[in-house]
Structure formats: C-alpha cells, structure tokens
Image (cartoon, rainbow, N blue to C red; front, side):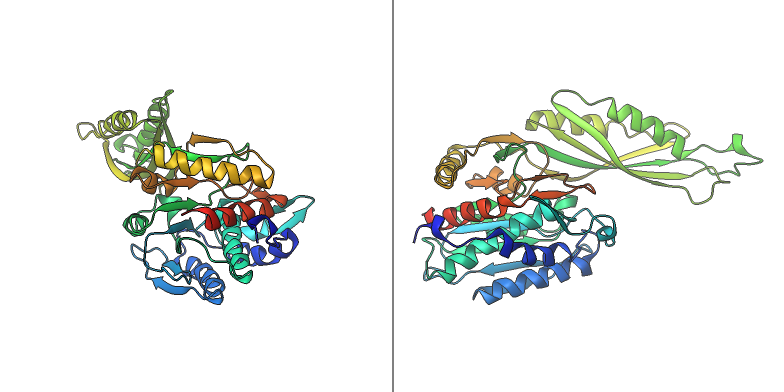
Length: 376
C-alpha cells in the first residue's frame, strides 16, 4: 500500500485533536502539562509503543518518550520531536473554545503545536493499522518547556537526536505552507532594576523608582533593534503598593539574530547595560539560548525528499530559514538532518484567534506517513 492510500480522514481526526486541545497545558503549570502527556502516552501505548515517562525538573512538567515497535529497535532511525506546552493559561478555553467554522478549527495550542503532533501520531496509527513497517525505527519525544526556551530538556532532545539519523519537527507550517530548514539564533535575558523605596505621598523625592528606570531601559533596549538583530521586552513585574516608590523591577528580554556573530554582538550589548554606578542599579543576566541553525547538505537532502513526497500528495513545499525558535534549532545545529515546520497550516498562534485549516490535517498526516515510510 502506498502512503497516499492510507485512510486519513480529517473528520475522524478532529474529535481526537479536540481532546488534546481541551486538555490545556501551559508551560508553567506542570500538572496540566503532565495531564496532556498522559493523553499522548495512552494513544502511543495503544499502538504498541514502549512508553517512558521522564520526570520533570526545574518546576516544569515531565517528558514522554515512546519507541514504536520495530525489528531494528535500538538502531539509529527517525526522531519525531515536539512540545506539548502552550502559551495559553488554563481558562483560555472560555475565550477561545474549540470550535469549527468552515475549514477552520479554533482552540488554544491547536496550531502551536498540538495539531502537528496529533497528525504525526495519526500517521503512525494508520501505518501500523495497515500492517506496514517503516524502514527505520521511530522514536517520539514530547517535551514540556519549548515555549520558554527548553531550559529543562535541551540535553534530553540533543541526546535522543544523536541516536538517530533524522529529526522531524511538526511545528506549524510557514504562512505559505512551507517548511523550515534553518532557524535564527535566540537569546533570552533577565533584567532587574534596583531603586530606593520611599513613601510616594509625603517623601516622593527621597525615592528612586525602579519602575521608572526600567521604563527608560525598555525604550533603550527596543531602540537597539536593527536589520540583523532584534530586541523585545515581553515580561515586566514590579510594585506592590501604589503609595510606595518601587524598589525593584524585573523584566525579560528576547533577542533574535540571523547569524551567530550578530547574536554574539547583541548579547554583548545587553550585558553592557548592567550598571551599578547610579542611584538605580541595573542588572542584566543571560538566560537560555537557541543556537543558529543553518541548513547543511544533510538537511537540504531531507528537504528534497520531503518536497518530492509533497508533490505526490499534490502541493509544492517551499523551504526557508525562519525566526521564532524551535527545538529544531538544537538538532539542526548538531548537524543532524532536520525537517521543521511540517505540521498543520493555520494562523494566529499565541493569540485568541489561533486556528488551523482543517484540510491540512489529512495533507500533513500523509506527509508524515510518507516520511516514516520512505526514509532509510
């Protein structure tokens, strides 16, 4: 049986995907992420996979590793790598419930990246149901912390990737439906200002506001954005009482660069903002970093295989390097052939308009099945 003949049906996939989407799993809620891993573990166990639940650390949820049945299990094969955490807090379903409107299905995390993960598992389900065997053994690794830079599972991903010949990452497809064969570098920073408290009513002049200092720094940092390296402040925490001059303020900064040398320069510029000489102290520390992934011959050869399979299905698959990190940064930078963003088509990820195009469920399940059955 040809992979195109496998009986994929978007209408039959939607109820299962809905169950995954309605199991909200924000990164910072370890118990919620673990509940999502339970659902995936059950479905993979039902396929006969050898299930391993890996405990979480650093306050994050655990990971799920599943090795599909295969006569050559334990030899280098295909790693399907995806994350089950989302940016949407528990309760988002009230404002973004799962719903279907024409060719669109909505819900928190449905595009990034539960849709891609689900169709990949569906591809394995249909392959096994048809009595087919993949040329290479397949390992599935679902992790809990990609949305915050993968601080607790990077080594797990890299070690698993090193045991395999290929890596498939079903992150959302690019806006034109294309895949990703390289990613920009990303660095995170923690920024803190430390001021001098005072009563804001009768001793305002005695204080030095950490919030005011941070506001000035935010403008300075975002003004550093250029063509080759960007800077954005996405999180700020400060203050407890409005009648007190704030003594501390914390922020998180994200920097993205197309080349490693541009990121290195951006890192230096950020760290140089630390200053203990004034009335308000500024402290900058570096957080997690994703390396630049530039497509090499192995990844480009994997892309050509993927593109030829897409043509058989009936669409042209473009490729490009992209901003926005993924765990493909790690595996691609290691030199392991990696094909990223082969997940579902859609739009609005990380917003209350997040949705997928329903007809892409069948399309991308066929593509995943084609890769599983073709790669040698």
